[in-house]
Image (tube, rainbow, N blue to C red):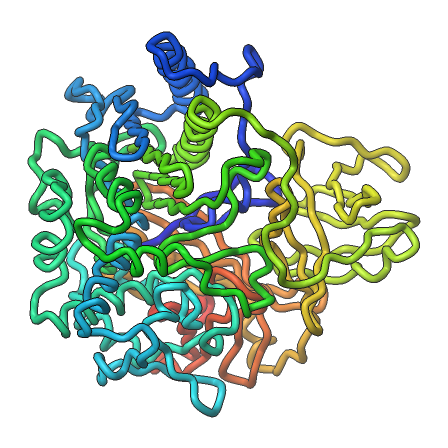
Length: 610
């Protein structure tokens, strides 16, 4: 399942995503009425809350062109607000409701994690047992010697060191089963040592789905239907469309047009289809100490930070299935948060919980341009509900993490931060000037100015003496964090530090890789809905860069820019830590072609080698 999306600034995220949405979104406040709703709970306050939310949602949908959206808010055991906006199917003039069924993408992972914890409670699985105890056929290539056992806990927390995706066949019209997918992994590389760093992985959750199948003797879909959906009265939910009534299925839209439906191979990572009203029962389950699915100690474990000893994660906080990174940093009384978001080509979703207050929200939409609106609506709704139920206590919260030390950004120490950084936008090179840093992002000259409190503010550079803070960079701040021998460029959401780039150094480029410069086309994509179309390898300064173009049947295209470190004459590793970092590109003999390039399960041939 591919998650690609981008903001128009340097904080473009590779979707998924996923994935960790706190990276690049900030809570928006309505400028027409900055005061929160009244704290009383009488009918007038409820009406006021509903009107403010309805007006805000309609405004966001109009600005972004979202076709249909549904939202449900939960307080304790009660649904306090639930409705749809726009169209479930615009061409058929079917309005969206809270019973419209959307593809929820990576929200699937929360339910998969709950199923795993069920089996742990029954003694069928152990969290710290190696995956190979349950899947002896699981094997991947490794570049590091020694004991690199991957455990169930590693998979649940995205710390297994597995690749983000195996793109070939991920979004296929006739996908592999989970069993066949595991067999495909034998020719792919593990990217990091288990436990080294957070690396969001759909591959890992596909493995969990297969583990569930093996230890229960049931298909993943059947197990989830009988042991998860049915006990929680999720009557309009399923992994795939088989159990979903046709009149409830939302049509997906891409570029404003109806998109092509397709199945997802990594079922347990992203194939969930559900209504927001059904997903409200998941929220209630959490607030009810896991009942009717789990015991209280299991739910507590799911909501407990697992990655306290991984400094490279900075402030990313992971539970079991749930992401715990602070989402409402300016609301002092919000307490802890648990969330997950989902993104596939035509749909996006966002679920946010405040467990200490038993408040939750689930938002879903059926348009490719909806992720930011869905997250903003979810956060705004939760903020208003918190204010109404608990009261207002707002201040900038301190960093929630204790890993890595941010370095003082004084003008006299500017040179400490200069260098080349691998980022989601590709290579970002920063040079030290008189009291600031200078670089180019997406072809546009920018400067990074220290603010005296450890933060840097990015501005557009107009000429040698003038820079300005453009609207697209408003509120975008960075910190430099030193972890061991690594320098990390971190983005800030409030004061939450999320790794954005890692400083990298040029590596020697063997002759075979020097000769690989040029455009490589995929030889076959087997009718995948989304697929790698081509890879362009080029030299940029002293680095080797791979620009990976991903295409889809609906003619939506995105490009990943990856910085390469040749390991030897046949193998190059993607530099940095994060999505698609650590992946391997291989040069191999190509039969009647001169050479062949392998990446993410695809075989590519250079254009001038045909």
